[in-house]
Structure formats: C-alpha cells, structure tokens
Length: 264
Length: 351
Image (cartoon, rainbow over all chains, first blue to last red; front, side):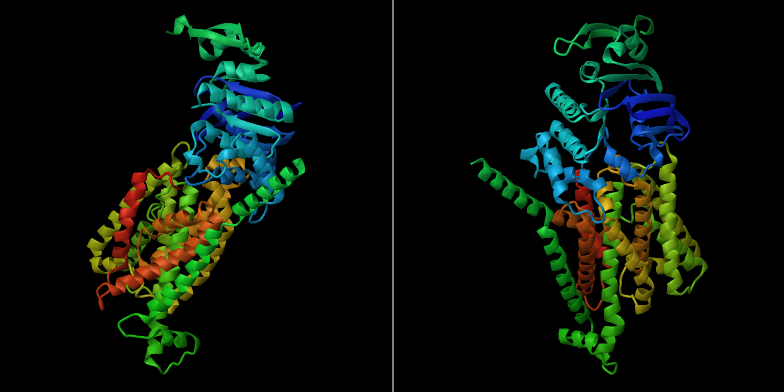
C-alpha cells in the first residue's frame, strides 16, 4: 500500500525542468529515504510531494487523490513538512513555535484548546525539549533547534512526516538522536516518514525503502540491500564503493569509497 | 501517593496553560496605549498658537457651540489635524507590521517596497501636468502611484528564477525607489515645481481637513479590519513560506490580500502627510519587543502605538520652536535613522 504516489511528474522553475517524467511510490507506514548527488532533484521532488512546488505535468497522489485538488488544510492534517532551511523569527519561544503545528486543526482566531495543549506538550516531551520550552528558539543549539521543528511537525499530528535533510549541520551523536526519534515514531506509531539524507550509511540503516536519483531521474528504488550496491553507487554518485555489513543493524554500509578512475 | 502526584501534575499543567494563553502584557499595552492615545489627543488639541484649556476641548467635542471662536478652532483646525495624525500613524504602523511579517524582512517599511517613491512620483506628475487638482483626486493618484511602485517592485522581483525572496524584494525596492525618485526630481526641475514638492516631501499633518478624513476613513476602516482578520495568517507566514504551506495555509491568497491592505493603508497615509518614513519600521519593532511575536497582538497594538507615536511627534513638532512648526518628517528621521542603523547592525534576526 502506498501513502504517496508520484505519477509522471515534471517539476521545475520557470523554463528549466529539474525533474522530467518521474514516477515513484512511497510505501505506507515505512521510512523512505531519497538519496542522490547535489542538484539531482531530491529536494525538488520533496517540495512537489509536499505541494510547495507545483508540478508542470503529472500529479502527486495522496491516498489516491491528486494533492493539488485537495483542500490544503486537509493535506496539512495528513502530512507535515520540515523544510531544509527552516528559520524561526527571533524571540519566539519553543512552546510558541511548536504550538503553530496545531494550525491545520484550528479554526477562526485559533485559541488553543485542551486537545491542542495535549499534542503540544506531547510533542515537546517526545523530542526531549521539556526543559527548554519557554526559551527562545534562537538561543538553542543547532541540534535542539532541529528538534523544535520536528516537534512542531509532530504537534501537527499527521500520518506522514516529510523531512528535508533533518540531520544536516548536526554532529554525529545528534544526527543519530534525530534518526532514532524518527525510527521510534515509525515503529511505535506507524507514521510514514519520507526524508532526504546525505549520509548513505544512515539512509541504509534507518530506511525500509530507498530511492536513488540522478539528474532528475530515478536510478534505483527498493530496500537498502537492493539499492546500496557497488554498481548502483557508481551509477548514482560516480564512486567506487566498498560495501560491508553494519555491525549494529545488519544493513549494507559503505565502508569507504573513491572517485571512479575514468572521470578523474 | 501516585494520585496526589498526578493531581499536582495536572495543576501544574493548568497553570502552564494559563500562562501561555493570557498574554497579560499585550492586554496592558493595548488598553494602556488606548488611554495614553486619548490623553495625547486631548493634549495635542489643547496645545497650539491659540491657548485653549483641556476643559474647552471637552465641551467643544461634546457640547459644540458654533459661536465660540475656540470651539471653531478646535473643530475645524485642531481636531482634523490630530485625528489625522493618529490615523496616519496607525496606517503606517500596521502596513509596516504586515510587510515585515509577510516578507520576513525586519527592515520592511513602505519605503522599501517602492510605495513612497511611487506615490511621490505620481504626485510630481499631478503637480506638473494637472496643477490645481482637488485634494480628493490627489489622494487617488497617490494611491495609484503607491500601487505602481509596489507593482514594479514585485514585477522586477518575481521575474527572476526562484521567485520572490525577501532579499530580491529589498533590492528591487531600492532600485525602483531610486529610479522613481530620480524621475520625480527630473519632473520637478523641468516643470519648476520644486517648491510644491518640497513642501510635500517634508511631510506634515497640519493641512489635514475633515474632507481628507472623510475620504480616507472608509478605506482605512476596511483595511484595518482586514489586517486584524489576517493577523494569524501573518504570524504563520513569518515562519517562512514553506512552513506556512506545510501547515496548510494558502500563502498566495494571504500575500495578495495582505499586499492590497498595505497598499490602501500606506497609500492613504502617504497621501495625507507625504513620504514620512520610519514609522512603519519603528512601531512594529517596538510592539514586538513589548508583546511578543504573535501578530494577533502585534497588529492591534501597532494601531494604538502607531497613532500615539505620530500624535506625540506632531505635538513635539509644534512645541520645539513655536509658533513655527518643525517638519514632522525631520523629527521622525531624527529618531528613525539611528534605529534603522541599529537594526541593520544587529543583522536583522529580530523579526
């Protein structure tokens, strides 16, 4: 069963097409990771899925219905987005920012109801931000800030979470911290997670499904075992990789790599 | 044992909810500001070349006697002027607040989007080609000019790849303002209307008449109500466009409506006092500093504080060197420019 279906889409800015004729399915209640080199259209695809960018041709389907025909607030009740460069305005506290996640569930002038508070406190708690909740977001570290944005997406209470490079700019431990949180949300609550990651080993370790892209085209999709192979990585990143098995999770990992000879 | 812990946890949560849902400061600012505004209006009406007591102001307003000269002065000269100042201040402040929220640009002001320059350009054209045009039409042209300025800035800004970013908007605004400014000056030189324009640029509410207020008011009232309805959406937009879309907001519609409101408010204000900058910049920041980031509070508080600030500035302009009036624009620039530099230096994180 697929949560999101991307059907023959073309996406781009003004005259340049970044993605042309791409079709892909995002499985329900699974973690799906999109990988690929810089500029391959990963973020563009994510933006089209999350209706931030309009498709020029084709369509994105959410639960079998074309996303641009759905009421945007209804979409927001099913799908939460964490953009790559989310930046909070100065002075906003953690609690305030997370509370905006309740917007799609509110109406009128939007005072918070009891249910809203419950979701907000749950989101703050599950992301481990209890002690920071009255602090300004700008005063937090990069990793904490990223968790605040994730908390906001969680407060939105959606089946699907879309995250564009949630671990970028974080140190090793904090990267793992975020990914483990996402894994827990997937395993315990059955949330569908779609993200872009640059770290192949993280992608392999935490994903059920991987999508490899290059030049706006789909190169390979499947389980980490199917995607993380030497030929595929050469095709996608132009690297000669040594693949081994992760001692923690039995997934394939890229031990080390070098650029392919012929292109140097 | 565990039950009592549960109860105390519940109580803690309730106080927590109370704390977050009652922005006491904002209420104090709003009502304190209203009171201060009324007092300032009263003082400003009573102060002037002809000395009038506050009590006379009261009777002039509520028990008007057309045979009394003092009542005449209050009714025909002082009141429209002071009310005009309050309205203009509110307009600039709210338009600035909307712009800052929508563009995520802390330096946004009606000057930024080419509004002032557009209006001034249109006025220069009017003075040159249609001398003696009644004020009612001048306002309309100023309005059109403001729209023209914004239109060009948005057009230039959105032509480029990737659409409108805050930075592009600022650059386009600066470029278009410079161009329109140069054209206005050219027109002024060619048609020898420099003096008329200079009077306009200096800015001032002294010439405000009841008829101006009558023309402005319906527009402004509608725009203000619109701004209040939009306030929550503006908060969301201030988190960033992608975040706002993700939360299910129709960002294009909100931006369009917001822009029209800005146009009406700032266009009307510029048409009365000329290109007085910096109000739209200062007041929203001041308000944000006092009441926090929620535009549901920022906008009503900006209405009050904007009005208050311009009424006080106008009063100050008359008190500095009586019976002469210091241009209100100069007075504001004196406070506004250092504030602008301070904001620019801070790097604009405070939005």
